[in-house]
Image (cartoon, rainbow, N blue to C red):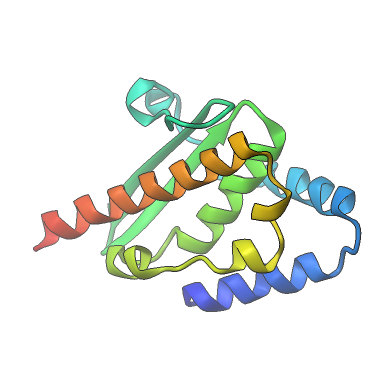
Length: 140
């Protein structure tokens, strides 16, 4: 499934909820499904700077696809990083670098985040794209 198709799937899921408290609860529920990062990556070099809570993201290349795993010590943040991993993991680095991730605005997430959580989201996206750039550079 392409990045855009995954984004549309998430948009449709969030349309089922009218109230943002319900959307937050769904986000928390989604976070419980995150592919958990191994303990060896739960360190400072995988910690995302700029997040209010602690978030770790790891990336590896398998058969030309970037596989992402993550964890957070905050339930809402875990749900947010889950959305990013759901959309971007399993994709090639070039597609990740070109992904606009418009679904984040379309589901209303960015407008309902506190400024510190919004900064954290930006930092998570930046780190994932840096991983993609590093893998793309290595391949070339």
